[in-house]
Length: 326
Image 1 (spheres, rainbow, N blue to C red):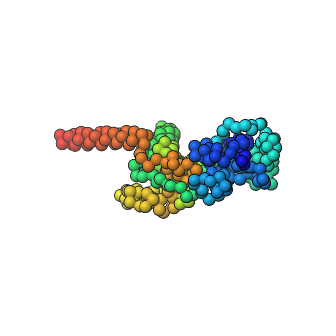
Image 2: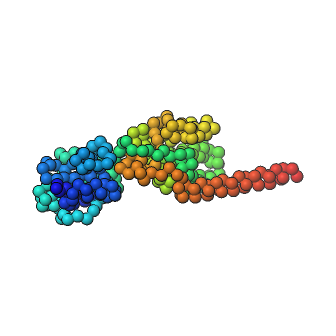
Image 3: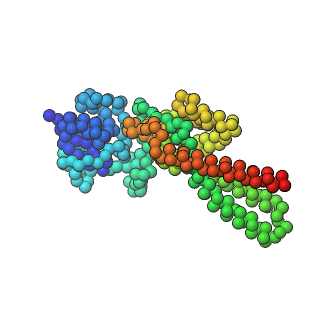
């Protein structure tokens, strides 16, 4: 019987285990097809997917390139566990395992004194071939409500600061009320709010989370057509392309309900997709096509606030109409 070893998240060899145990670990999700494994006779550690035939795996995806910093290898207790990856590998006669690094780690010939990167900064690894759950219209609306609530707060703070500057200018010299500087300050206030909104969406969509706080709360993300993270400048372009969707009487947004991959007009223009947060990962089975509790709560609260706003507007119009009629 062949004895197998597998690397945990800390790059420590675990084992020995037999092929049946490895299959059980894969089936339970405790390790993945990207997990590095080794047995006697191999010159180096390789991904479990490379031995799909030998291990008689039920699902045999193509071999995936595994970076030493892969986050898809969960830590599991085993018989071998020492503080040094090299000494642990030596103990079983296996090739040394390199310490875990970021996906964006420098090439091997880079200075060894470079500071290591934190795991939270790792770029998500794109896994092709799994089922993809696209974010529908209502999930995107719920995320939009959350993000715009946050932006209202941010822009209110910026607007208050600029407003105080304009008030100080007026109080300092009443002749400046109609001065060009007042119009410049008002224009800067509008541009600041526009810039903040553009950077907010572009920066979050280009981050490792691939999602704004609203999208993270709903469990969706923005990717390119291949499932990879979009660039900051594509995020900026996507933000301003959304103005086209708005100017067309919101038809650009409604296209989500009719396009094959639930793309809005600005998604089609910029080549982006909005998908479940588990799409293009090793765990596509965690995707959820249903709306979910958070989405329902946000939609209901957003609907109630919109209704209250309409009622308040109607009452104000009625009051003004009554005053004009007297």
